[in-house]
Amino acid sequence: MRRHTRIGTAVLSAVALALAGCSGDDGEGGSDPNEKVTLSYAVWDQTQKPAMEELAKAFTASHPNITIDIQLTPWEGYWTKLKAAATGGAAPDVFWMNGPNFQLYASNGVIKANPEQVDTSVYPKGLADLYTFEGKSYGLPKDMDTVGVWYNKSLFDAKKVPYPKDGWTWADFQDAAAKLTDPGKKIFGTAAPLSSFQEYQYNTIAQAGGFVISPDGKKSGYDDPKTIAGLKFWTDLIANKHSPDLKTMTDTAPLQLFEAGKIAMYWGGSWNVAEFGDKPIKDKIDVAPLPTGEKQATIIHGVANVVGAKTQHPDQAWEFVKYLGSKPAADILGKKGPIPAYNGTQSDWVKAHPEWKLQTFLDEVAYAVPYPVSKNTAAWNEAELTHLTKAWNGEQPVDQAAAELAKAMNDLLAKE
Image (cartoon, rainbow, N blue to C red; front, side):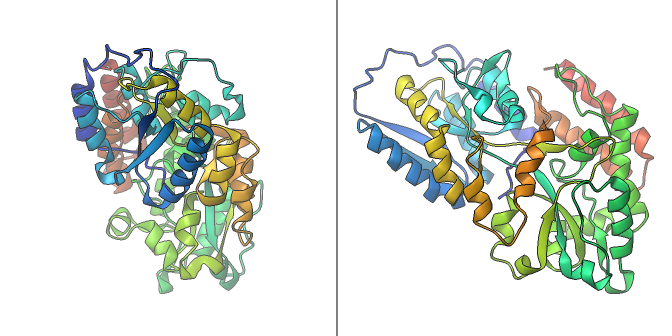
């Protein structure tokens, strides 16, 4: 599954208003660690529920006084339900958190900072940094994902184009996209959509040496020439007709086009393993690292388990989060779920699909960069789409659209 890293501005702005003033009682009421309690645990992915149930069972086996009630709410309603619960002071004891929403929830006192120092060096640095706010660590990373190039070997073979290799460059990718494009068969070398920044724009911006947002979260990087170069990587592919146009990709998602054999190279994540595993295309594809621009880079993201600030059982909730972030828990997750975040526990995930070079996604961690976020990420996510659509459909030059986006984004950041 995709790691769900974007959320609508209207929803998130409503959350910001609803959460204001929710802090205060931090739930630390001196709970009895020997009390028999049931912790609510909110998640959003049905495919991961069996793994979460196994983790809950294993935790209760070693903590017999604590029972876990897993509450599944599909992604489409997860944040709305969580907002309502938080507003009423009844957020789950433990719940899943993603990068774009993290700072909003942390800054409004809806989640608890970790009550004790934990060695976060056991997780990729980009993930540990993602869930740190104002110098404090919140929760612990559960899983992780990076982005690679999934490619259709049959289409490469038909055009006698060599498969992608480690160390390939932007020029290599662009050359392959040109050779693989077959207008007569309506086959494109790749796809350059605008709706999935985690897989596309954020990666090439980093590869070009640019930035989306400054490290202090105060300034947009969209007017930086290197950032603009990262955007032009994609618009040039559309202009050269090596990618479908924006309307085509809006009508039919690139993932569908790739699975239908109409796109040769698809920028997708480690989460696509679950998607491709039961599709006819599975025997025709493999994965390669992202090509290198000025530097190597891939966006890293992952879900964290966090403790609700209003929990009546803070000690038990923290014990559960610590367990979920441990090596034993990661060993279970690696066999049944996404890539575990705990370093050195990912081999079972790789071994589950020996037909693909899944080690690619792990090797990329060495040069991964965190998903760009701020206190109100979704506000400027909306601005990204508003302004960059004009460049993607040819209404404006990329540098002009990017400059206008930078101004709009800076105005939004100033209000945080």
